[in-house]
Length: 209
Image (tube, rainbow, N blue to C red):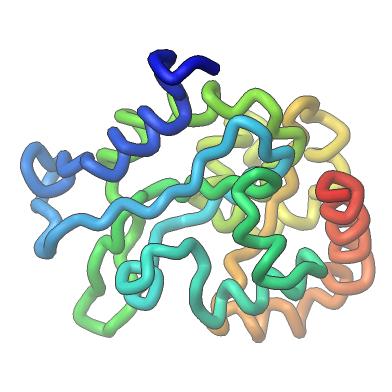
């Protein structure tokens, strides 16, 4: 690419980072703090982590999954931080780019509604090398699976083999959110560790080789 030719990924990334619609033209209540969009786009990544929205630690650092949930997700994937943040091989596109704030109980609010309609289709189309989407949590599963999303999170993740077989370039693997709040869920569903995780780790190893 010549020095005068635009880099579509770089331009899109800059546009997303400059986005302030949740504050300036919101759907509902404006974001109560300064937006800090967090997304890592890539023209070469074969894996896309489609998460929920940044938490407080990610809002502070600007790195996707830079918290305890990220530690668990990296363990699920069988990789370390260096590979996890190698944008040439792994991209990140949460359903909401900015930390949405917290409710009265101190839990993170749902992803902002403005992000997906404004950016998601364009951003996904800009990453044609993606072969595997990790749909982390219900919000990502609803958007990426469409009619394949039946029932709640447990039913969707339990159907992972069927969903992987029914999707192609990219294949989609539904995952629960790796939050500590789902520790009990993981204990109640041991098949996640014995059946799904080995398949996930094999795919990650193949796609990042």
